[in-house]
Amino acid sequence: GGLRAHPDLAGRLAISGELTEDSRKEQAGAGLDRLSPAEHARFTELNSTYVEKFGFPFIIAVKGLGKDDILSAFEARIGNGRDEEFGTAAAQVERIALLRLTSLLPEAE
Image 1 (cartoon, rainbow, N blue to C red):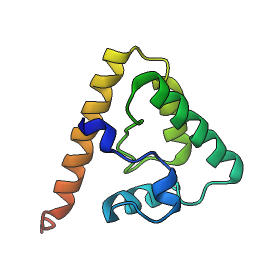
Image 2 (image 1 turned 30 degrees about the horizontal axis):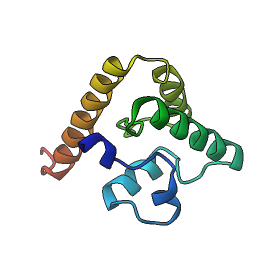
Image 3 (image 1 turned 45 degrees about the vertical axis):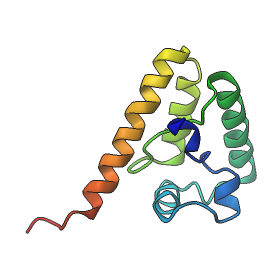
Image 4 (image 1 turned 180 degrees about the vertical axis):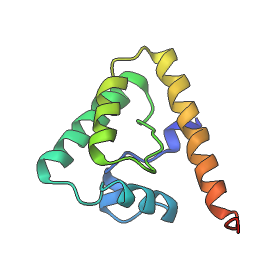
């Protein structure tokens, strides 16, 4: 259930402007809103292959990563078995939640 609710990276929701504000900022920070046509095609291909294999979208906490880092992780993780990848994706959801919650806390003086 919950993993399937995550948007594809550089996917349809990003293009149509329908991402949540958090997702939009995170993807923009990683440069995913400035992909070349070839890069966009690669993300689209990887998203499709990944969802077909695992049944849920590729999930990674993009904060602090660039598009090349994300592509490398995408390409590496697509070779995982389903159980391993489910665990990795769940851990990434936890990381995203932690990063978002931490960003809401007041800055330490």
